[in-house]
Amino acid sequence: MTKSSPSGYTSLLQSIRAHAPGEHQGADLPLRISQERAEAMLHVVHDLGGQPDGPLDKSLHTPAHWEKCTHSTAECLAWRGVWVAEERRRRENDLGETIYFGTPYYARWLLAATKMLIDKGLITPDELLEKMEEVRHREEGAA
Amino acid sequence: MSKFNVGDRVTIRDLPPLFHTRTQGYTRGRTGVVVALRPEWVIPEDEAWGRYEGRREPFYMVRFNQRDLWPDYGGVAIDTLETEFSERWLEPASASPAPGKG
Image 1 (cartoon, rainbow over the protein chains, first blue to last red):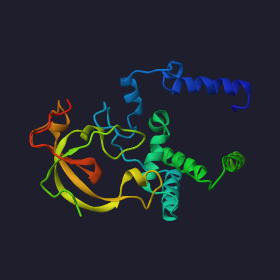
Image 2: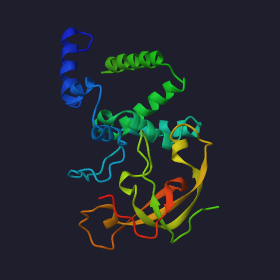
Image 3: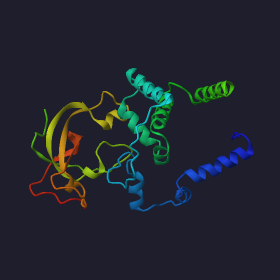
Image 4: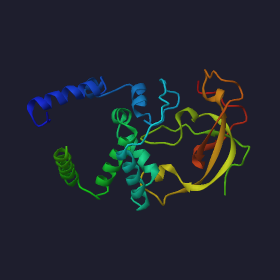
């Protein structure tokens, strides 16, 4: 089911409701928030020290092909002088808390790299969308 | 020329956090001891925002007692934590030990 069908879009909306922070509908409306809430919202996402922890998964992870490609791409972009690691970390924070904590480690790299390339005018969003469609068709054809 | 030397007691500046930082929240306002000098490098406030040839500063490795960082620290008294700061984040520690932020 694709999201271009009405029922597909309805199920996407339900999925967004399930995954986005529960409070975000309420937070859109107030014109003022408390200082305490503002400080909590502005806390830098990757500055985790002192926050509640959970059980650690210590199993070894074998990098998938897309993860290796993502790492290599990020390094090549740095090698060509397009960005540096510190900028990548800042751009990962810029993705926002929901995406930062809700996506795999290398998905953050990938999204940060993508936005950076668009920000700097090295690619355009429409070029990217056309390419994504092209790849999707190719993969579906191969399946 | 480095402003601080190994052995100096320094307090981390407690500036507001915004968007990105390399100065952990739990170190701000806390006092530690310089244990190593690091070469000058571009400060993260420039590097993170695309100014790769930005302001260069000495960096310092600072050692804190864990009990000074975490009021309810459950480990032994000799436990320490070391982390790095660029010079602009450090101030000479005042003569009397600064109270923890609690």
